[in-house]
Length: 229
Image 1 (cartoon, helix red, strand yellow):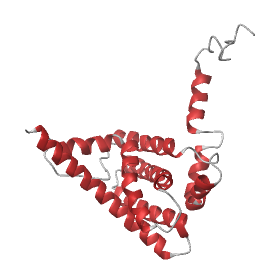
Image 2 (image 1 turned 120 degrees about the vertical axis):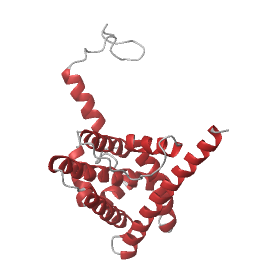
Image 3 (image 1 turned 45 degrees about the vertical axis):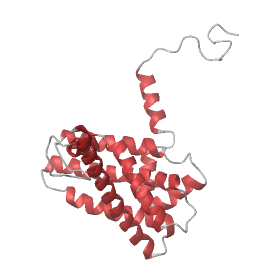
């Protein structure tokens, strides 16, 4: 055995020195650039339902991994919104700054990647109810939402960038487009031929966001009650 390799684990005894090429390789590996994050974005813009269904049922190498996708796209939005001081979020509360609801809401708006996945769980619950006749379990629906909510973050990012550059208020327009995209993508995933699929997707999104917001308020109130005693 060559001295460059360990006889037990077959790994190099001394790894190569970290340089620019190593960093680029790591970024490529994380973003799965061999298939392409840009390819994933294009496919999710053109045929979201078909591509996600293919990812779940047949080929999982064509698209970027869903959890990584939503975290990376959420990070992009966070960086743009913080840079331009655009304080638009999913959930907003007019509460006292010392309350736990305010603290939780700040965490949500500072960690969009994780909070999107958590909110996705609420939306997945409602989608599972409305589309219960389809043979998709909760976690498969959650994967669907990782892709779709990730695309929403990119759409918000584009509008946040233009709002920051032009000073025009564009985030309300972005919210409308995001609602339309979500309903279209989810409806296409379940049954693109039925209008009811798009309507149920829209209602599931609204209910998911509402229950997510209500859960934040309940959690904040409970923490306030326990900490005050």
